Image 1 (cartoon, helix red, strand yellow):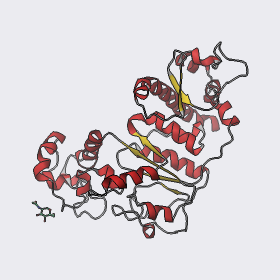
Image 2 (cartoon, rainbow, N blue to C red; image 1 turned 45 degrees about the vertical axis):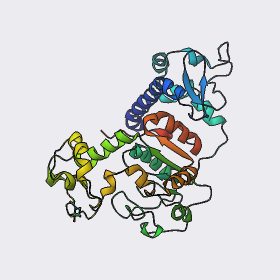
Image 3 (cartoon, protein in one colour; image 1 turned 180 degrees about the horizontal axis):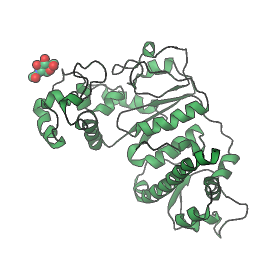
Image 4 (cartoon, protein in one colour; image 1 turned 90 degrees about the vertical axis):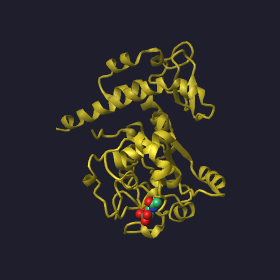
Length: 327
Ligand SMILES: *[C@@H]1O[C@H](CO)[C@@H](O)[C@H](O)[C@H]1NC(C)=O
């Protein structure tokens, strides 16, 4: 019974591992070109050009190293490694991950804030953190409505956390709008602050597609009264009807943008809005302050690298990165 249930899970994990290895390989050039890439990711110049966390080089079996001291599997193809492993445990062991996890001394980090911004891979990151939360029994700030916490779209206020409230939450990771002092007032001193960002134009289009484009008919945009998430808005009000294309919207925005419309912030820089930044003379210093407050900002376009760095920061197990596919 147990085996029957575990089988599909193992297959998904195997696929995730394969996907991540391929992605890391393909993104090598992009990372190399980026002078700011995380120093924890080390380039191993063995002709294979792969990136791994800068931990002691994992060796699956003592002595199994090539002439340059790298683990034997570095010179083998991913296909060979996958074909050779009869279970996910064996694959993780072949890759040195089992060894790395048993050798490390870190403890899972129990105090986390993830600013979950819309359309920045944040639901996937949320799923990973949600499993981590359950595994380690973290006390989360609960959302009173939909997927929002803290009085969204207003800036985070502790009084808008659903009961039971407490002095300090282990984890806050639903959608909320950043307010540093308010968030710090209900979190522990050693909290790790995380968020994710995305290339602005692709983000802008994704917000439009999600809140407006995914509804074929006006009647599908349920919240005409705009009482909760205001699906469709402000795009529906600005375009006058459902079904318009992004190009049409981009042509129209110089004239049809109306700051008085409810949820008009979705039609501006929605990313900085959710980061709690307001347009004005203090913008740059507020942005600096936000950057200082964040321990790590994940990049949607570098998702695989981002979650590997998150794994290291939070001392997660590799298996913690598994996410159940939704579709
Ligand atoms: C902007 O939106 C507000 C609120 O819906 C509305 O009262 C106003 O007439 C709109 N302005 C224009 C120029 O459409």
